[in-house]
Amino acid sequence: MAEATAAGRVARTRRHRRRHRDRAGYLFILPWVLGFLIFTAGPMIASLVLSFTDYSMIRPPTGVGTANYRELLSDPRVMKSLSNTFVYAAMFVPLGTVVALALALLLHRVGRAAGFFRTAFYLPVMTPAVAAGAMFLLLLNGQQGLVNKVLSFVGIAGPNWTTDPNWLKPSLAIVSLWSLGGAVVIYLAALQGVPRQLHEAAQLDGAGPIRRFFVITLPMISGAVFFTVITHTIAAMQMFDQAYTMFYGPQQKANASDESLVYMVYLFQNAFQYFHMGFASAMAWLLFVIIVVITVVQVKVGNHFVYYEGGEPK
Amino acid sequence: MTSSVQSTPPVEPAPTATSPGSPQPPFAPGAVPADPAARSSSSRSAGLSWRRIPYLVVLTAATVAFIYPLIWLISASLKPKSQVFDNKLWPEVFQWSNYEKVWQVAPVLRWLFNSVLVGVMAATTVCLSSALVAFGFAYFRFRFRGAIFGLVLATMMLPGAVTMIPVYLIWNKLGFVDTQVPLWAGNLFGSAFYIFLLRQFFLGIPRELFEAARVDGCSYLGMFRRIALPLAKPALIIVFVFELQASWSDLMKPLIYLQTEDYFTMPRGLKQIIDAFALSGEYHWEIALAATVIATVPMILVFAFAQRYILDGIATSAYKG
Image (cartoon, rainbow over all chains, first blue to last red; front, side, top):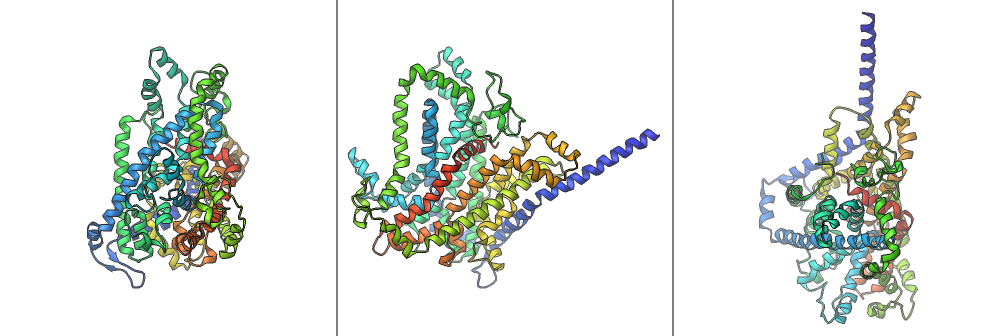
């Protein structure tokens, strides 16, 4: 009897202490919860509501039903900016992955010297996007730019990268490729985590370097590749800084071409230059849905190929 | 999971310093490159180094492609207007006055100061708030912990555009439009990616350390301040530098929130200089390029000082699961 109450008391104090601890846990995560409610959940609902209204900040929003969403489909610039963004992403993401992977593979081969090159490849990442945009406007200049000068050495007549409507998106992709050092660093770390004895075993079995790359290296680092492809795609869909720096602003009438109009630039213009906030909200939700769909597809496809050490991740 | 990817493969017993569970696995500087690779490559290097020459040649070419634009930029920013496009590495004439000119035509010093202020505020607040929240998720067991943490991760996929307009309306209502407050104050509530990073780090701290402090009568906040925070210093440096860089680079928020020239951050001001001097008027690119150098150099300096933290932090962030 006495033992039972003692045990009960212990259990009770333990439960009490447990509850006390729980409450403290909530206090620690409180900042995030507040921020989530004020700056994420609330605004998400508000933006969804706004997307069914006409709102320019002067008068209160007026409901317009699904008009904004119908306008999304009928506004040619929405479709144009969407396709521009896809084209840019389709150039940058695969190319960026292959180039970064190639550089990381080379770095992995040179041992100690890798540190120096790794630093060199990462410096452009530190360069602010506006600075990179300004710099590449000159480097890619059709007549006098350094890029075309180098191309002419090997007998290629370079295009007018920054003015020819057909070359604006490749230009943007080049600027982004210049700062892919982050992916190189990630891949190099992944490569260094591939156990050597796997390669040695395969070598004993007579597998050549190319076969070893596809059978061992690539599966072993597929998690890192998968991660960068997803994050690069999400970032590419929201590309803004370089495009805005290079082709928009007060001088934009000079290049009236819509070929460099990426989705976020058009959304930004609608929201904060034309103050079509309802329409811009609808654009934002369309982008959200597109990003979710792309990411889900990538995860589904990725799960067939990605090798996870120690089984599936949570 | 982090440590399982990075720790030494099972050829040799892993040195205890990097084994999972020790306080610093994810971020300890230098822990990222797996030892065997480095060791075996150095043992190979003696006899077979000539084999690496083709690799080194290609890598050097790539390095030139990555670094030369920056060198070109510095060189061009010192040239007279007529020679900006001559693509010579060494300017024929050093026109240092380009930099004086920038100082005269725009409040560049002011913008630099603003960028430093906003960057330090953004980085400091995000470090403290994210660490607090991360510690909450790492140490305590409470109802819905898993679900709430899942929600934290889910917010990383949300494009900023979805919340951009209502958040602007909130700051507008509070009277903070055309001040720098909206550029950093959101960070008071933590940021999902950093919360994740720091939680991983805190999970690596042995629980016994906290239990011992508990027995000694340490409060939860005391545990956070005296044990968790000091041990997490390498991770906090990473978060600080990442956020500083993100804030320094950001163009969109300053475009949305700042109208008064004196409040501009460096990228916002740089964009204005490019528009006014290089893309219109008399095309004074040499002035715009001097401003570009001024906007870039501080981040290069940050990189010079925090390089290993940044590079190891990037390498680690990929293994976030």
